[in-house]
Length: 141
Length: 254
Image (cartoon, rainbow over all chains, first blue to last red; front, side):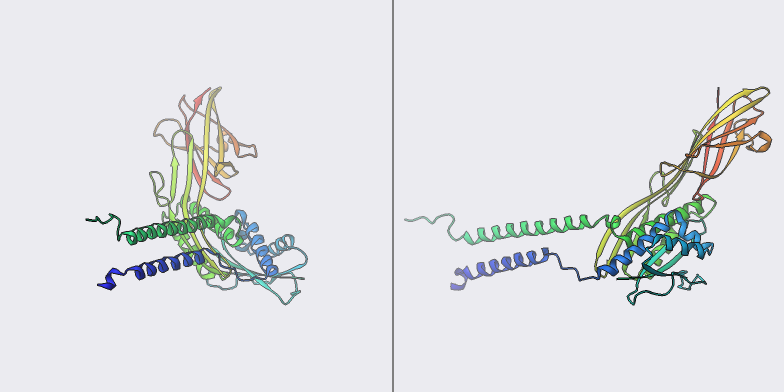
């Protein structure tokens, strides 16, 4: 009987429960800290992606690949990228077989730090083709 | 005789109800904050280069599928090509886990994301509309993006008929549009019909067929025909993306 009448402890438990709920909600709202990234490499990778996206406007990149016009593709990359950036581009088909039979590169790597930008290139011609393009880049730091 | 106060022993209940109200308020605030964060994550494709690239690939795939379909391909080509792209992106996107989902528009005019119109009032439309949802979990970032892509090639015709001796001179003004912007034609073929449900005849060099390109997506096509007062014309044109569009118009006498 005494236990039933003395219900102050129950209220304390409920109060503690809501307090912990409040604390947990507050913790959930705090944004998690993103892991540190190498900004130089990140910028280089973004540069590579942006270069390929720009070349692929109006399906130009897929047309060059379809026509195996590797010389023009290399010249386009040289024009688009800074002279201080080394690049090596490899074109794969959907089964990851290399398509380009000649190297599309600007020479030897100028740094040990090489980043890679992968790009899925869809052709616009009525005969649908998809290529996977890997653009490796390094720059003088 | 003493009477008990009415609220005696009920303060605990009031406290519980108050606590519940506060908890509901807290939870709704939390939910609201998450919703705001989620909506802020939408349309991040404008900033993220990887997602911009994926968006461009979806556009190119839709152009390819529409070109295939309008040139006599299967109706299912759009879904098949987008499934292929989605699989390729999932398998070959090494920077993170990327899931591309798509829903072709089905409405009164669009069937499985594709729509073609060829009326008698000078309008021809070949169009494709698909909604996409992109879930991207990268090493450093996680994004959710929803976007829709519309590929539309429009051909507008206006034809006039002018008596020129024994023959009639036909002047057809064609306007090509890609996504409502002026666009160039890759090629165009003109046909004419002297009577309703009559035989369609191709206009060629025998008809003194001439195309005047104004360079801004507008073309003036002229040819001569032996016709009565009624003349129906039909233009079949490809845009530079190889999408075929057909438009018909009735010539007006001037």
